[in-house]
Image (cartoon, rainbow, N blue to C red; front, side):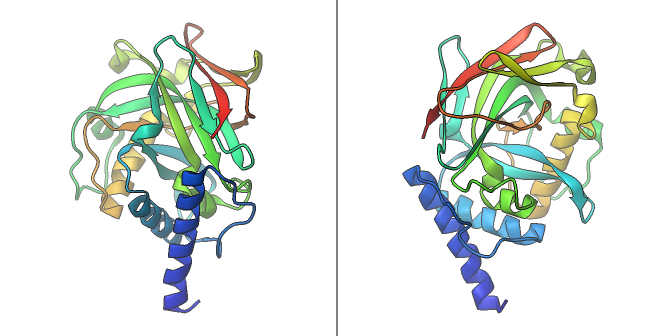
Length: 264
């Protein structure tokens, strides 16, 4: 691909996804040449973030399996107008009804201190020290493109990492002393359990996801700030949902969070 057509492809893909998301319409076909290299995919994502011109309230982290060039995770922005705090009332989260839609039970970490913008290598403990709160949550994964999860991580990355919302649940008391790997996490859709697991199955766990994000954002020269959320990965897997579904996640058998699904 020639340099000018490469740049045109990035602009075309980014613009198509941003326009489709604003209009709430599906994209039956991928709007360009699918990126396969992660750097190309993040170039599309960066262009789309600039076009969206919206506040980034956090970042979702997902798994790449099998890893590509030694990278086993990906990231995508979570916009402020798609973050909802659970308050005991019914919450309806929008999805692209004719695109892709799923729900994921996740641990949410809140950034408490600004990471060093030039530091590109962290230990788990260093990453942990930058966190000031841990909450339970549900990530809504949804894209105008129905095949976003079927065509490799480059395609997923190119459309904001397939994020379309975050439900923030209760905070975990004394989280610094908690062993999250021992917590059973369950996800139910319409009252039927569809997944159950612990973070022991998730690479190096929630704080490993934070470490990845701090390192990758420094490499991409994207500033992180206190108060932003990190959605650390689907503990029980990625579970498709449809309009009207009721989703409920349970953590350690005692903390719950839920929402319903509506059309965007």
